[in-house]
Image (tube, rainbow, N blue to C red; front, side, top):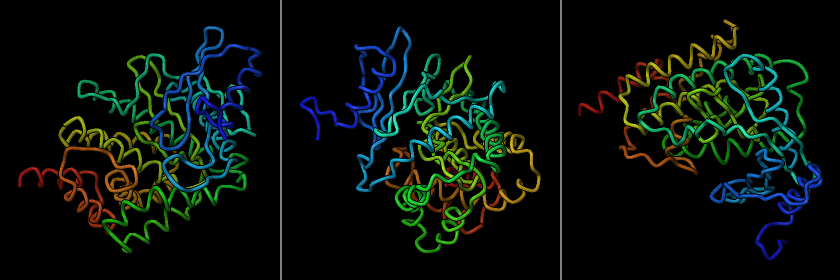
Length: 337
C-alpha cells in the first residue's frame, strides 16, 4: 500500500521514525535517487545539519527478486568495521550510522558529500584524483579485509546465503556467462564459495566520493558479506579501467593506476602469504568484473567497441593474461589495427 503522495508505507514509516528519533516535527525529505535500481535515498536537514535517510527495499525496484530485510544489519556492520579500521588513518571513511530502524529497513546516515563529488562523474581534468583516491581506498580496503578476517566481525546474520546468491546469480554471473558460457563456471564457483573476510561487494565508481582536500569516502555497504577479498580488489581494478576508458586516457595510464591499487591494497593487507593466494585468482576475477559492467544487467555506456573487451575477458578467465601490462598491451594492439 501507499498514500496518495506515491510513497510506500515502508518509506513513510521510515520518515516518521526519523522525526521521532530527532524529535523534530518538520523535517523536509528530498529524494535524490529517483532513478535508483534498488533502494530509496533521501536528503534531510535537521537543525542545520544535513543527513541521509536510506530505505532498503525488500524487492529491488529493477529486479523481480526479494532480498532479506536483515541486510540492514550487515550494512551497519560493514560501515562500523570499515570506520573503526581506518579511524585516524587519513585514507578513507564511510558515513556514520546515526540511527537505524530495523522494522522498516532504514538507516539515518551522516553526510559525506561536502567537498566531494561522485567518482562516476569524474572528468578528464580530474584523472589525478582517480589515481590517488582509488589507491587510498585500496589501502583502506586492504586494512579492512585484514581486520575483518577473524573474530566477531565475520558473524553471519543468517541471511547471507540468500544475499550471496542474489549478488552472484543476478548481478555478477550474467555478463561473463554471455561471452564465455559454461567455461566461466569454475571462476564463478571460486568467487561464490571463497569465504575469508568481510567484503563490500560493490566498489564501483557510483559508491566512491572524492575531493581535492577530503578523504575518499565509500558508501552503500548493503552488500557486505563474508566473501573473497579478491572480489573487492578486482572490482577496484575494473572500476579504474572503465573510468580511464571513459575519460579517454591512454591504457598506459591505467597500467600505472592499477599497479598502484595493487601495491596499496597489499600494503594494507600486510600478509605476504595471503597476497600470494589472492594474486593467483586476481586476473580471472578481473575478467568477470570487466564483463559484469559491459554485458551484465546494468551495463555501462561507453563509446568503444565491445567485442575486443569481450576477448580480453575471455583471455583473462582462461588464464591467458596474467599481468596488468598484458591488458594494456592488448588494448594497444587493438588501437593499432
